[in-house]
Each structure stands twice: as structure tokens, then as C-alpha cells.
Length: 395
Image: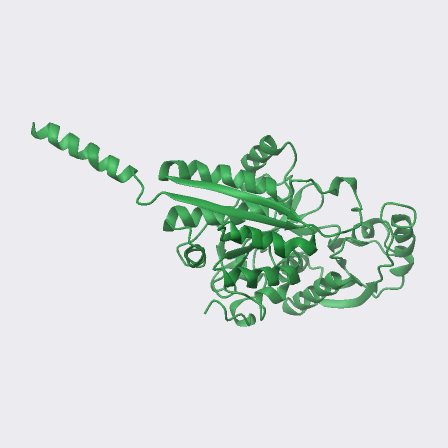
């Protein structure tokens, strides 16, 4: 009888342990703002209808696998909207009681929606924009950045260039606002890592279709003359946030040199050929679910919702500020198929993560590069470090 009682006690103890302290229904959303743009340079870059949303579907599957054992359920609403309807779409999500929202939008729209979310007690995840100011003096305490900043990407490129001893740059930037901001990120990186910019030129966007004779052929004819007579340089760095000219540079320079930045060797969070660090299983699951290859936007959304899932699992809460506080705490870490677990910077809400350098078919390298050291994490050698950020929203 004593042994039976002990067995029963052990069984009841196991059952008690298996029953979660709290069943949680996690309701999240992905809001994608679709801006009017020209067709992309390449047909390979045509935007799929489920861009980003496919990452959400995979995240719900992944979160649900663990959640099924803990009594947690995950449901993500996805909405695509035009810029002029973004506010009403966001209001509709808040009216449904959704307080965990992943946003794919430009900086000015993201900031406005984030302030709207703050008034409702909601947490926003930035899955798209690299605006440095949003990690600096325009940061918000209810905004976590999954997408790397322009500064992180520029630093990733600069580190590789320095490692290769390509420390003299010919910087070519576009004339659009996104291009100008990106160019400033590269100038900052050059100063940070001791690189000399020997030439700094602006290539003016004259408009027009980029896939007709008035577009790409014109650009291709202009670039050799435009780059003629540049001072000696090791590498061309392109700052083309609007995808106008940079990808034509590699075979249309006056003086042949490697191209990095917005063309040639490109910094990215993820790409469909990335297979290291167990990423093959991510790719195969994504392709089985969607019937296409993963894009960086899909990965960013997946990662944002996996942050939510990890916080719900570990901290047993779906409260927006509870999720945020756990995410920026020392207890948080998440596997992300990049060789190291990712964490958040608790001074501005930016996710630390390695940056892949992609040439269009393979991962050529991963930054941070060997030899770039930091007292906290080598990942903090990319982007705004604590002393460099003016963000006070997380104090």
C-alpha cells in the first residue's frame, strides 16, 4: 500500500506539473503597409501577395507546437493596407482587442502608429524600417525593432571591407530620402572603422520605369560615364534605398571594382539560400507551407512572433508590457538560425543579430567579423551602442 500511495503521489505530481498555471490565448496581428512603387528591377523581386504574412503563418505553427503542451494558443490576424488607410486598419486591430502588432511600414508611418498603440497599451514590433532615428532620439518604449537599423547593415559591410583591407571607398548614393539616409549611415560607419571615402557622388533618380528602355538601359548607359575619373579606391559602396541603380553597378563601372551595400554584396537579415546553423530546416518548412522561397520580410515577421512566443512560454504572460519587459531582460534569448542566440538591447529595443552578406546566390560572410570585439557582445559592434544612443524610453 505504501508503494502504491507513493506511485499515486508521483502520478498526481506529474499531472500537476503538466497542467499549466495559466492557459493563454495569444492574439497578434501583422499590418503591412503597401506603398506605390515602380516595378522592381528584376522579375525575381516581384512581391508575393503573402509577403511577411507567410512568416506569420510559420511562426504560429512553431509557437503552437510548444503552446499545445502548455495550454497556449496563437492566432495572428494579417492585414495589407494602402498608406492612406493604415490608421483605420490599425484602429480596427486595436478595436478587436489585439495588443501585439507587427508592422511593416516606413519610419514616419511606423512612428505614428506606435504612438497610437501606446495610448491603447499595445506593443509594436518593427519588421521593416531601418531608420536610425527610431533607435535614437525618436525611440518609443512600446516599440521593439526586429529589422536591423541602417547603421547595423552599414557596419556589417564596413567590417567586412576592413577585414579584406578594402579601406578606401568610392561612395555612390541615390537622391531620394531613403538613399540619403542610407548614405549617411555608410559615412558614419566609415568614420567608426577608420575607412577613407575617396569619392562621394550622388546619382540622381530621374524617374521612369526601371524595366524598359527609358529605365534600366538609360541607367546602364549613364553609369560608366558617371563613375569615370574617380579617385583611387578599393571598393564601391552603394547607398540605394529605393533600388534604382545599385544593382547595375557591378558590370557598368568605369574602373572595375567590387561593389557592396545596396548592390553586389548586400547586407540582409536572411535569404533563401542560407543553410548554415540549421537554417535548412527553416527553409524546408517555409517552402512546404508556402510553395515559395523565404524573403527577409518573412523572416523578420517570423522572428517578431517567435519573440512573442518565447515570452509567453517563459514568462507565462501575453500582456504587452510583460512581453516587452521579458524581451529586454537578461533572461531572454532566442535561437534564430544564425549561429548565436539573439537578444535585445535594453537601451533602445533593437534586436541584436548577425547580419548576412549575400551576393545573390550564397552567404559570402557573416558580420560581426572576427577580431571586432566588444565588452558586452560582438553584436554590439554593429549599430548604435549604448553610449551612442540618445534613447531614454527604456530607462
